[in-house]
Image (cartoon, rainbow over all chains, first blue to last red; front, side, top):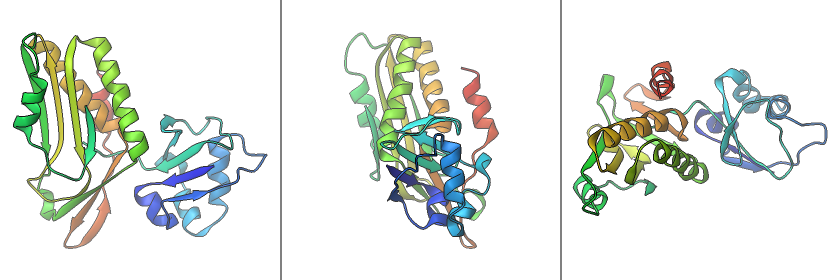
Length: 83
Length: 143
């Protein structure tokens, strides 16, 4: 699957996107975010407080309780500030 | 029409394009500009291209179910902009003014809270990411 990061999430992690093999025991976005947090370093900082983050699966806003599958494109970012 | 682009846009040309038929009695537009708040030097806008168009198209479709619209144009600039620059354009054509005004405001309110754009401010003291405002959520909730 593809993981994408934007704004300060991208800066903390140090990359805009990466390929990721979804482990079998991860079923939701929250579990994915917690798994990524465990990598520590910039990931630990980016995923420290999930309430500060928003997420999209296949270019649609979803909640952290949404399911995730191995072919999804998942993007993590702060609340949007366009306009 | 929905565009996210680094280039500036010509509001007169966009209005002329929206005013494409003689059924149109009203074209309402909103143009946002970069404000020079607190010594702001520049804003840099980042977006999620694959999602931007899809998300805005969803809101345009929603607006079209609520109001009888003849045309909608949304342009959002990305990249580095300085105070005074145009940043966003929302233009709506309809037969009557109420539909045009309301749909224009609805689209702008929804764009603020859903479209995947992020602003980074640049000042002499450094850069920082703009935080989302709860007032924007409030504005979108009234629809």
